[in-house]
Length: 248
Image (cartoon, rainbow, N blue to C red; front, side, top):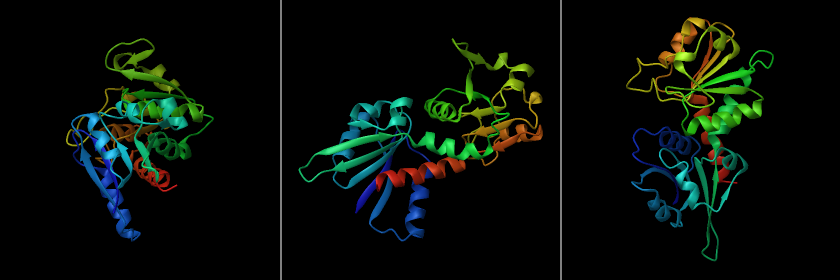
């Protein structure tokens, strides 16, 4: 039985496991399993990588950056983003194992937001939060030709704070992407502290969160007339890209 899985720590609810097991069921794929592998330290990844049954893994918090030290090669986008969420594991006949890292977060985000972008209007974006996912979003926005500004809670060079956001800044940035965990289940009543009253039908508000389906951020944005999108399609596209990589 060939193995795929998700590494990280801790691991709770997993979109990936549910998605792939359902995919295997629907497509009658019987020779592959996908499971969760919580590893308390990144050094434990070596045991998984050396197991001849594994031919691919996904990577989540907190190892998307650390895991790169264990890889032989990075794809173009993973090298640019400096974060990995997908690894292809190749075992050769002479016993050599080769690991290549990819970032399919960027692909999933770009492919899901591109149909919603109006090139005549959507020229600048605000990115709320700056974790690993934000790096993939920035890479995708650069490919789409959209400039960006980062927004964080504390003042940093070349970043805005939430308190600095005003009507002029929101009018100038028609795309707003929540890359923070604010609003994730079970804290669904929370939302990023932006001035929602300055949003209108010109805005596209995208939340990487998919649970709940409509976050408070998206609900408040929609009430002001903004176009909205959650992160579910991004995850599906990312998952299919992972599958393509592992089986290429």
